[in-house]
Image (cartoon, rainbow, N blue to C red; front, side):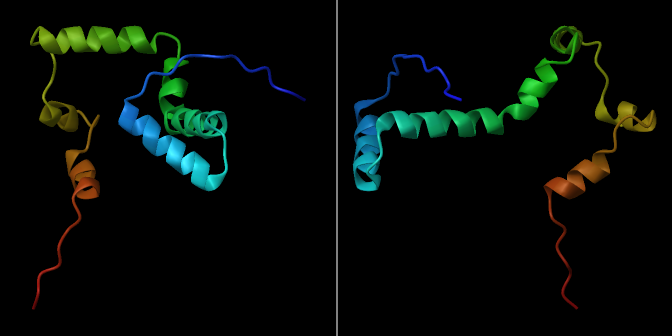
Length: 103
């Protein structure tokens, strides 16, 4: 099964293009192959975003939430925590490793 390919124009700084060309030459690969690989990695890294965008009404709900926050009607994290909707201590403990005290 062959996949149909399209052409596009890519604008990069001369320095970046020079580096990519050097790497492509060293690895004996084409620029097309490298850019195709980079595009695949980018899509994979953002697959969660694509999944969220596929949820009906998700984008609109986010926009409404942002408008609510900007108008001052949002809630503080402590309020969400008190309602059982958010646990900041768990989030904080995952973000910052705990240090063990020396005895």
